Length: 189
Image (cartoon, rainbow, N blue to C red; front, side, top):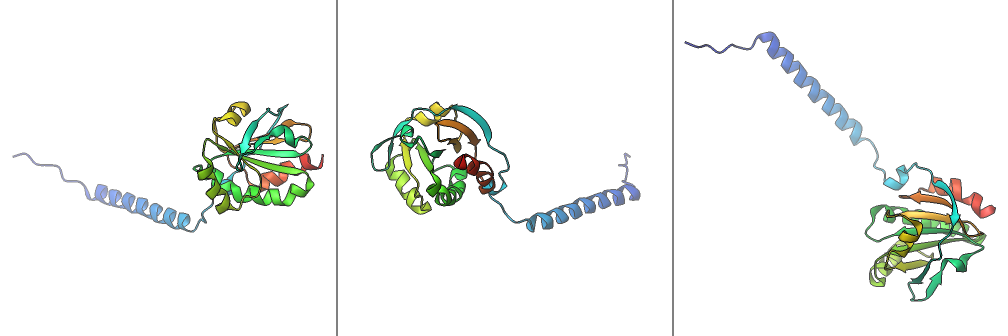
């Protein structure tokens, strides 16, 4: 007759204690995470913009009204060019921050130009209305802005100084903290 070895009582209690330990750790982690307030990517965004120095591209596009518009028209202003799309979650998250910053500094020669990437007027207009965007919105059906700024990421933002030089570059969402920390100095230059 073949007998199967029986687990020892010590081994049984050791496994039971380990299992209870894992369960306890899980319960503690659950309650710790449960009490952590949710945050958005833009609020948590802590990266600083890259400081750059290159000539702004010669962008000529169309605005929501169908008018031909150009970056050159804004020479003498500090311009934040924001490349975005309605389907992009971080783009949506940053729009209220961008709108508030624009309202605060537009009287100081600051312009914010939001360039939608490859979407039609019919898609963009409801988004603009929903978010109460009052800054200029341009349409870029051929990704010209992304090619000119050499990026494939949305959102991407570039701050152009009054002389037409790109001085700051963000890849990803922009936080209020970093807008306030880096852009006003360029506005007051």
